[in-house]
Image 1 (cartoon, rainbow, N blue to C red):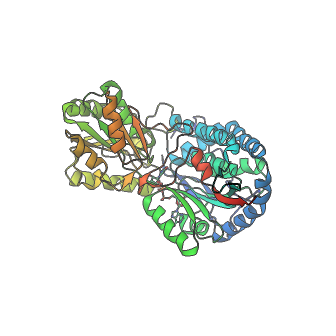
Image 2 (image 1 turned 60 degrees about the vertical axis):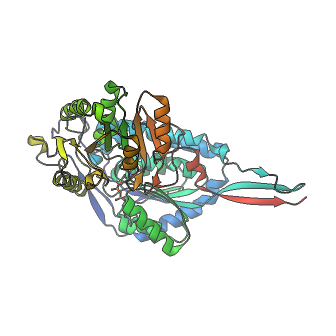
Image 3 (image 1 turned 30 degrees about the vertical axis):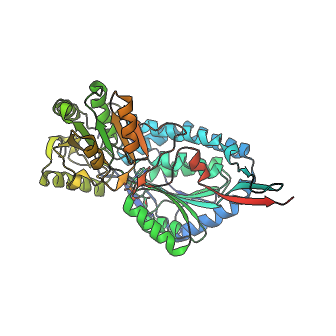
Length: 490
Ligand code: NAD
């Protein structure tokens, strides 16, 4: 990699954790390495948070919570806007750190930093929606409900959108009057340490605590903490299920789980092909190396347009520019980490063995710059059938599976046959067909003649094993409250 280009040096010197307003090492003094996936070189080290650190964070968060909750919604909102402004002011530093730590392309990652700021701002204005109801349960008396914060909440985050998940989603928890302990992924922990610096400056001590570390220790300590009743998890289905089990061993907890997807995009013969072909590429999130939960990784093409669509798609995917994620012109960077890289290669082999027809990619790109690092070409398999593993299991990599269909009942049965139900896309010019199909698709977030985008105030979340709970809209903030009924007898 060319060291002379700007932005090559990691813009954070000594990443630390945040406990009780202080930037700290782990009590064990242990640190772990974060690797640059573009060249496998060490980027930096971060503290390896332990169960003892989580306990300290809990004590700080519990001590800070009553005062934080006692602020008016307007005061909490003003503080969140300060946090958003401080993030915005440091956006370039965060962006370069994110790109180097995740491998996600800079052009796309810029949107994540922006989304963190805009979601915090959105939630900062929602405080007066923390309202209850009055209910005419009996004549003459007054029956009402109020919403109260849980207290200390735990948040556990995956590797793919680190700053967006770490920063934006503080908004609803804090706005509802909670204090937070947050753990980023061990695979991309660096931007959370910049967030820690910003929170140390902007927030009262203890309101947000950030513990870098591994799932098995720091994550597990959050999940099993007997006094942390509300936990928000974003990550894979197996970890989500493990967290449900662990949590249930210690207490009755409220968990929201935002998990994986194997999302369908169904193209009808009357779709606008000029838009639908690029949409299939955008929806697959090749620009994130396929590492986005909402990726439409199963593409169902009607038989009438299958061959021409597939030919165009394969040509465009083969022409994508894989390269340095810090280069504004790169369409796709490296896979985030070694384990994920090996998983993707394994699924490509499975796809071939099961009889999928490789029409684009399928291997490490050629060239000196790709000899080191977790590089894989954007990959498309055609002739997929529902029984194949690649057709139903989440790869979380740049591998698109294409199916041919000609019967709507059948394609919907296949689309709904996997364990997931996160997103879906429908492409047709016929509005009745579009709406009827959307109603039959068992997914939580559906685009008609669109893909990928998330929209302000629209709740996002999955059916079936894709999760439980909704985020990004007002429901997310309300999910950080408990409802209390009060009866006033006249
Ligand atoms: P992962 O499940 O491996 O890890 C996620 C987080 O959980 C990490 O911080 C990890 O340290 C922690 N963790 C691991 N084991 C734990 C345990 N036993 N107790 C507590 N914490 C533990 O997920 P990943 O590989 O980082 O992310 C990829 C997955 O996330 C994909 O399945 C993807 O679809 C999903 N995802 C879902 C959404 C959504 O909104 N639905 C968004 C992004 C990613």
